[in-house]
Length: 341
Image 1 (cartoon, rainbow, N blue to C red):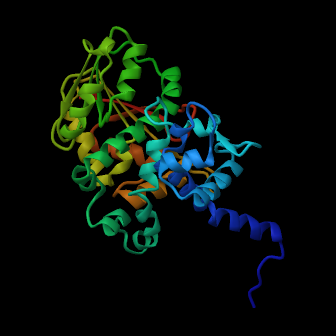
Image 2: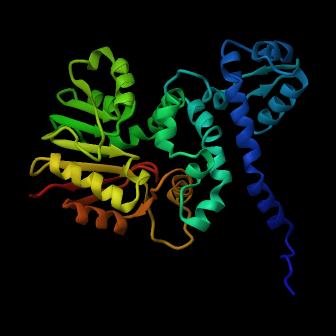
Image 3: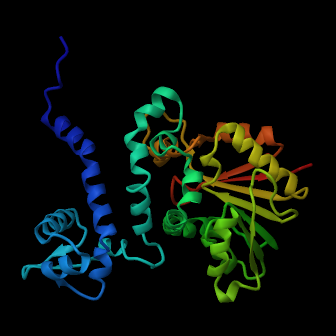
């Protein structure tokens, strides 16, 4: 007869893991209600917050009491609520904001995670089944959500860019292309760090149309955008190509096709940086990429890969693996490769 382990700590640990989505959904609600923005200029009463967010006062209190209990905002003795440093990460329109990430992950992404078992049983994409279309078509059909996702990636990206710039010297390269560069956050940071370099943000036309309006004034003479499909053609003859959190969105066959397009565009001796999570081969070892891989499985045909798997992709696409460079986070290792012929 099977028996549960006689260990209450394990029972409560599993309970906490299962109930983690309660906190995540509460964060989504405070983000959707703009609570951080409403508190940005100082503490407010519950009545004020309820009126300004058009919320039911007692229900809003229960939400804020719960989020304050896990360190998001503070409930004061006089009954007012105050923003704190953790709550500030949910402010709108500030560099590094996590608000867009909360809105995307707990908005259109959430049904895909609820459908994860479907993907595991069938090998198909849970998002496609939940929404009736691929994630890429969803964002084309819902451009406001697409812009929010682009901002979400920029917010998360901001947390890792310093680690990339601290470890890799971009200054020797005169022309750079950021493949799937979204709103340009990565390339802008690189160009600030490399004053003699020029760069191109390459992405879908509907993406770079928005990006073109966001190029900082001081970079406009060194940064341009180019729209197209990276499965067809990208700008040619740059010294350095880079692609962050793109390869993991695609199956092996699709990734090889993309990399072959890169190979064709690159000059002999040109470099390509693939910035992605590289999963450790160690069994049972915690690694951010192992959980991120579930997100990729829920959303796309892609996956997070080990170094061996990346080397296979590079070999199939004609690129030479040069080195693996660790950064300050497990989600943004740098795979440096080169075109020899």
